[in-house]
Length: 348
Image (cartoon, rainbow, N blue to C red; front, top):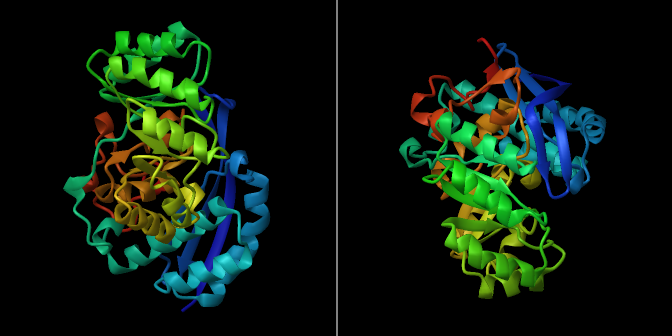
């Protein structure tokens, strides 16, 4: 069997500037991978690199030729374990680059069987939770407007980015604009342990569901301090990169937050989920700001999750790829009428 692979870089403008405690962006650099078999069937994947994890579009583009050569050497899209082992042999790091290839291979394999990927995995699409919609850092009035717009668009699960000296003001603005919404907050490592515990008290008063990554990943004892004293459940994001991290966070958080672009492959994402379950943790899947070329793959994991935060494509002004429908935040796998992940060029 022969496989041919290619990739392209795409710059995706955002609908609104997106701010977190580490900075603000107005566009997202993604890299799209396509792997085609001898019959002309193409698998699609996407990389959304994060400089926080040492990747950029430049580093992805630099390693992809070697990664795609490895796929062509194996030559069989159904030999997923072998392919992913080969990818790790080529580059130990670069998880977003490896993940783009993993997604494309999974997409192609499922397409060759003629079924959606979640069905190939034997998952129940009705078990998928709703995805949250993220409100990035901004001026307080603008945050209030974004929250009102999100609710008007049908999203009733909102995640608020925090990590400023206006955190209480921002949460109050969102709660004012969205009194009935389910709220979650994400500090992106911006708080001290004592600050996080204090803030959990008034966040609980505002009916927030949980706090994501309150303290730096480099401070595991700080995370334990918060977990043992917080009035809200704690989700670990930056502290939980691959399945190997799960044992170390199991006694200092309630929720393991995986991201495909951290995990490095769909197989590793499923291993992380299994490890989290074995340690009694709930599981959330988050994302970077990503095209549907990769968000569609994250959606396939939704039946395995307690919480979903896969709104990356919803934050784009336009996306060259369509994927699984997310109206009102519902992950509509039951409506997926295409084999594979459901990713395809927009307009197809």
